[in-house]
Every structure is written in C-alpha cells, then in structure tokens.
Amino acid sequence: MVSTTPKLTRTDTDALSELYRLVRARTMKIVAPLEIEDYVIQTAEFMSPPRWHVGHTSWFFETLLQTFLPGYQTYSQDFLFYFNSYYEGFGPRIERAKRGTKSRPTVKATLEYRRRIDDLMMEFLQKLPGHPQGDKVRTLVRLGLEHEMQHQELLVYDIKHLLCDLYKPEIRPAPEVSQVTEGMAEFEGGLFQLGYRDEWKSLDSRHRTELFGFDNEKPEHQVFLQDFAMDRAPVTNGDYLQFIKSGGYRDFRWWFSEGWQTVAKEQWQGPLYWEVHDGQWMIRDVDGLHPIDSKANQPASHVSFYEASAYAKWSGKRLPTEPEWEKAASFDPKTGDKGIFPWGNEPADLSKANLLENEIWGCSPVGAFPAGQTFNGCQQMIGDVWEWTSSDYVPYPGFKSEFEEYNDKWFVNQKVLRGGSYATPQLHIRSTYRNFFHAHERWMISGFRCAKDL
Ligand SMILES: [Fe+2]
Image 1 (cartoon, rainbow, N blue to C red):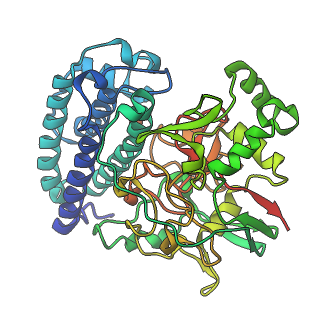
Image 2 (image 1 turned 180 degrees about the vertical axis):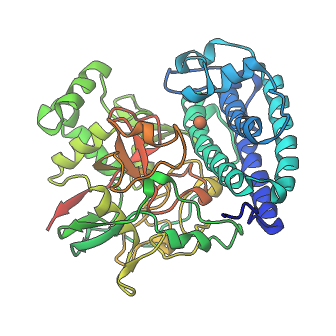
C-alpha cells in the first residue's frame, strides 16, 4: 500500500509562507503610486484595470481555499464572477473587454478581499504539514505565486498603457556603460538539450524553495541545431530608427502578408510609444518623453512579431529559433553543458540583469550588465526586453500538462518570446522560460535580436 503520510516539513511551509508574503507585498508596491481613479479604467480591450489584477491574483488563491480548506465559505459570488479571468472550470465570468465597465467591486472592497484571503492563506499554510494533500497544495500555492508574478509584469504593461509618464514610481538609474558591444557570436551546431532540467529543482537556495519550472518548459529533450550566429546585442532604438528612416514601414518587401495588412489597418509607422514631435521621433516612457538619440543605445521595445521579422529581413538576418536562443543564453563551453542563466546557476540579482527589482522601469543601455553576459559576450539575454523568436508556441515532445487550463490551452497561433524584461521579477525568470504572445501584440515589453546561418 502506498503511504499517504505527507512529506511536507515545517521548514518547507515556512519558506513558502515567506515567499508568499514577499510576492504579495511586491504587487502592492507596484500599485502604491496609483490614485484611486487609476485602478478602474480600462484603456484597451487587451489590458485590464489595475484593480482587476489586485483582485484576480487573490481570486486564484481563493479557488485553492475552496478546494482544500474544509468548510471554507465563498467570499462573494459577485467577486468570483468579476475576478475570474479565462478559467472555464471555475464558472461564468465577465468578458475581458468589459472589466473597465464596472465600478464594483470597489477598490476598497477589493483590497479588503485581498487582506482576507491573505489572512486565511497564512493560517492555512501553517497547517499544511498535517494536511492529507499537503504536497499537492504546496505545488498549487507555488503556482499561485508564479501566477501572481506574471500578473505583476502584466500590471506594469497595463499601468504603462493607462498612465505612461503619469505613473510615478521611484525610479533608479541604469548602470553606466563602459564597454562597446559589437557583432555576432558564433555557436556550433549539433545536439542540444532543450528545456527545463528536473535536477535544477533543488538549486534555489536563496528562497529555500525549489527552482520552479512550468510544464511548458518540460521535458528537457534533444534537438539538433545547425551552426548559427547570434547578435551580441538586442536591436536598439538607434538601429530600429534606421529601419523606419529607410522607409521600412512603407515597403511590403520586408513584411509577412499578415504583418503588412496590420501595418495598413493600424496605420503603424513605428513601435508603440514612439511619437513624432516637430518631425522628430521621440519615445514616451515611464520617465518621460525623450528624443531617440538619448535612448539610441537601449534595446528597442514594444514591437510586434511582425515588426521584428520585418526588421530582421531588412537587415539581411532572421529571428532566432527557440533552441538557438536557449543555446546562446545558456551554453557554457567550460562544462560543455548549459546553465540556468547566461552567467551560470547563480540566482539573478541586481548586478546581472535589468529585472523588476532593479526598479529602473525602462530599458538599460546595451552593455549595462556585463556580469550577466554569456561566455562569448551576448548582452542582456535575461532582462530588459522579452525577445521574439521565430518559433511557434507548441508543446515539447513528451509534454504533460501539470495544471488544468494554465499553459496547454494556449498552444495555438502564438509565438514564443524568451528572456524576461525589466518588468519580470528576478525569481520568475530563467533561460528555459517560454513566454508567448500573438504576432500583432506589442503592449508588452517585447524586443528582439537577430540571428543568421553560418
Ligand atoms: Fe491570471
């Protein structure tokens, strides 16, 4: 007979509780500079009002309490309806595009809901070592925290769309750049192990919890690569301006047919948040409106897959495939194997990559994080901007869904992006992480670097 004794220890739950407090507090830090009116407005159907994120991330933990806490009474049916996102299994819900058409639940009621769920979760976590399904719950709590970190990043995209330079967080300066980054790094082809490695689980010593990996990053499996070269730097605003100035948005030759149609329909002339003032291109960011010149050496961001692909073709290169990107970002010639990050297996910190905790709230110049570069000088593969790949978001061979309706129902019509952005929490990123968006989307912090065959 299989033992049903929970393996969970007091140390496990203490570490999880600590992580819970840390992640939940970070969400509130992001919304702290908002005025009450900012919480309820929806500026596009693809974004959500900040109040919705604050409630939805709590709703996620409430579904867990409903399932695993005996005698739990639902907080409010109205909240279940308003704060569910896309989960068919959890009943009816408000349409995404209508989240900004309701003033209730109020911000005050949403914050009360959040506090109540937090109190119950902290109590519940303390009791987990004796719970018959303790291990399962622990996995789901961790998923809830990873989910919340995803929403922290979405909050940054949505607040930027809503307020842009009217949002006033405390902004820290990006590091000065002391080196020049040029050219492409070359990588030998051959067999490569793609995806999250199970042995990595035990490696996150900093948080005394496991190094999380989503089901869509698994299983690690063998792929074959041709020799290739990868840009050492992401395409910068200065590079991208040349594409615009050379008539890139008016020349069908660079565009996929669907991309060309989107350029016409949306009347795109440059990336999102690029504006023309007195005949000059400017970029509006959280820290204000700037001439391109002052941001010429920063990675270009808020470009769609269509724009990234058009630029790549114009420049005589192409976007990397997902396995090429991962090999470039993780291969260590000293061991002949890959690491979790470009710099090895040490966790991300402020010195290695521009992530949410750096609080720069924008891109840093190319070369600003030399401690995070790859062995052959590829800069900022982690942090700054998510990088488009040419790969479709599909399951890896041998994929097994670990969570209902989480990753697997999106395996169609989307493209993979890699590497995280300045809005990605440190704990949430690794080289094997697969993000995904539709080819036309660009309100997220998306950029790219180019590759080519050798
Ligand atoms: Fe969600």
